[in-house]
Image (cartoon, rainbow, N blue to C red):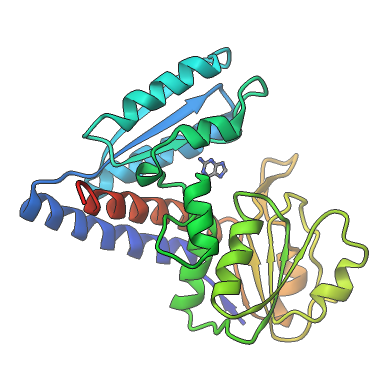
Length: 282
Ligand code: GUN
């Protein structure tokens, strides 16, 4: 069994980005810039935003964080996005989700210039991704694809079960896998017999936010398990959607939580910001 080391791979990606950023600065006098918008005070979101900011700085990417009150109106948010769309220092704009209930997420995401949409959530980029055209890919599924590549995990012709059908993970993950010629099944909370699907899977990707849902008796021998879940238990400990201790000896590859998929996402965000900067004025 091999543990997929997202922490080490993420460090490698961040270093790749840092080198490319310094070349872009030197050769074209372009410093990539990212704006992150946080509305409200959800502690988990604040932690993610803070690490995005720190990772940008370490990679030589200019970064600004806009922290807005929970009571911010949709109009105020749209007006901030409009300013950022027109700010030549900014190549990427990321609005941390979830947004407060009084704000319509789709309206906000659609207001971002698709060429600055480093999250890949704008319908323009979603459509291009589904059509297998060049686009910004959502960081989490993009990070999972990079893990497969890095560890030589073949996708073509494989049965892959994705558990969870969110816009941020499950749906884009399924699209990327389809484009890689995998046979893809997407399960959700209404799925009648989850185990019947996972038992047949060469690869299981789980992103549902239910601690330890995936057990060893649900997977086949030699399965690859990719755990996107990050759940905080009452003890304060972080744990995944898969029961790692139960599953690990049955797997060929498995991601740990923490230290698996989680660290990959920021690396991929930096990659997307660099890509946006390279496309400046093109
Ligand atoms: N909330 C959870 N994951 C993400 C993400 O990838 N991007 C944004 N903007 N918000 C998130």
